[in-house]
Image: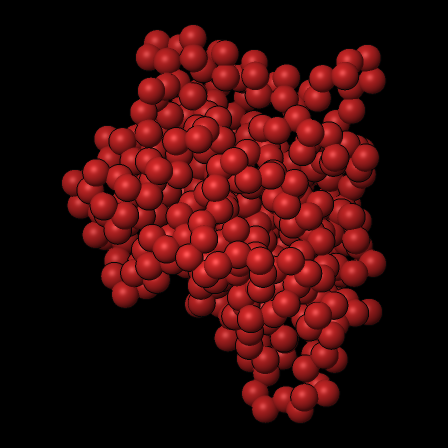
Amino acid sequence: MVVIQDLDMHVLECTPLSPSPQATVTTPLVLLLHGFPELSYSWRKVIQPIADAGYHVVAPDQRGYGLTKLRTALPSDRIRFTDDLSPFRMLNLVKDIICLVHTLGHTSVAAVVGHDFGSLVAGFCALIRPDLFKSVVMMSAPFPGPPSLQLDSPTNPTVAFMSRVADELAALNPPRKHYTQYFSTPDANADMCTPPSGLSAFLRTYYHVKSADMAHVTPYSLPSATAAVAVLPHYYIMPLHATMPQTIYASAPPDTDVSKHWLPDAELDVYVSEYSRTGFQGGLNWYRCLTDEQSLNTLQVFAGKKITVAAMFVAGSEDWGVYQSPGAAELMRDTLCEKMAQEDFVLVSRAGHWVQQEAPGAVVENLLRFLKKQLVP
């Protein structure tokens, strides 16, 4: 546990074999930031191999997740929907990571690596503080950049776009909704905490349907038109009146146990145990910030700013998350990241959304290749 301002932050940490206490802070630091619904534990298969290559590797349970908790809260307290969103805004999540770096005694980070929603945090870390974060790796969710400015209107253009998407999806036959819209509702946490088949079955199915084990159409880039996203799987574009458990149960094959080859029951039980204790609202509050105009407005100060440090993107070739936001992957690769080499846009074959768990060997290989390049003068 590490004290980070208002948090007792839980981290997993690994260093090269037998370093001296003084050597730890001079060993290059690599930070691993998880997504939703995940934990620091999601990096269990890659932490030690990266450390064995000579890095100080730290993976935190981020704000609202796992064993990390507010210092003023009782251990049994759950984060509520009605809580103030300001602690979960992106600038505060980035500040958490900056505070962690300083608490660990480091003055720079060799690479900040983020998966899923952690990809956004990692991207903003590199965008805002390139002096501190020397390189960035974004995984499974392309970094979309900061919200743009609309000089002739007070309305945030991102909010206006999401509203237009919601209207178009609701007008389809059958009507649909975006999962971010659902995750922002007061009912989402209870729906997922107490699903009809139990939490273990829900998480097993959720991890399965977004993995490469799920039979689906090979993902592909979508046009920019808003209603075009309706072709995405139902866990992204949901039936309008369905919960997430209802959605994934309806679209999952009868046997989801095939995912046990990369997520055995004992490892699934870690997620089940933590989320049964904490609920999902901490992570859902991150999604609420994606639909909250005030939260988005705080990031407009960075409109037009690009990532200037070395960057890499890694995702599974069977992951629709790469294309869920039309044009985002191409914008990240070709415009937002000034130093993303062609070979550093990596799609790992036969892997889905949970690429660091499904294909840890390929992820470690690519991370170490990328890190090695940063050491070359």
